[in-house]
Image (cartoon, rainbow, N blue to C red):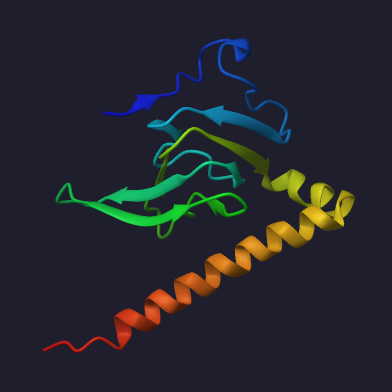
Length: 144
């Protein structure tokens, strides 16, 4: 069902890889896994082209879709809480391009480009507003 990207292959076979905490963009084909559950905890990802699905596999093997993200939107791996490993996975729904920015490079990247800073912070703000709207919908549902 999914085409998992083999990160052990040479960089020339699938685009830039992540070394020395550099900002990298990588292209993914539809159904490629961009981020596995538990990995990439030190980066933020920006969707440049295409669509990405964020999801979790629940203990009963159901899939919980956390979001469908398009160009200009951001995502990152959940942090570990009380020693529990992060569980979010990201797959390419369509052919896409995603930029990975390690947290230690985020400050210099934002300082270098005010336009990039506005876009990134705008994407984070949209994601937060969407989360708040979803929580409001859940909390105001009739439980009968």
